Image (cartoon, rainbow, N blue to C red):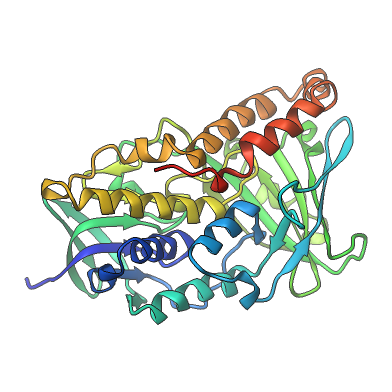
Length: 368
């Protein structure tokens, strides 16, 4: 059967897939004709997400020469944290704002428009069904035909089935999330809330309350342990049944291997932040790491892609994910009131220091 050939096939046109392609072009503009991006959806498409862009996400976008002000957004100056034992505020020490909130459908479409403007081949409505690897390439089967690529970047997100095909031995560590919108005016547009008090209600995570570009408040629950129950049981905690969606999330763990032969995982497919459920900055960041790894592999015989996982872990982004994984295990693994009091009250200043220096701001720390 005839097939198309391309050097780099990116499956998924969301933030991680678009980031991979844009970073490849930023490192080597001649890659333009050697990249193909496919997605099973047609953009714009709705995406369940709180829409929070941290300073790390904005740093990566600026380095790509992209101006987030081109799309509607809401700036958040102060984050309010509520815990089982106290409340405190957090403001960025490096920026005039702490968080920026966007609409995911608009944001993803904006990134995709940058790919199209750069001349990257993008195909929407393409469903991938299988992979077949050799030592030098990967044959990808789709409902529209077959594509042979030297490298496949898997950027399909948390809910895709392809990761099970690409990484059959990987045991997923999943969280759950639900989201809803209200017209409550209890907070100003420039305020956002992370409420960790549900830890005492058998939810290993938090409740969030963000502004949105529609003027409504975007709210939801993030639970880091899907074993606590179904999406439906978490949705039942939402007031008045106002849930607009919910789904499981694949969490980052250092035990996961995000490379299988010529297939590299990025974004949520590589694992989302297990502490805050933050996805966008790490989607952009893993795309940057995948691009860097691919460019280096191109200089080796047979495009040797070995040690991709080390490229991720041995970076400021990887260390931030690793620290968040450790903190999540401590915070959510010790729900008893005495431990929560110790973490949030006695160690409050240490928690904030760790957040400023180890959890956030990783995109400003350069690696070679």
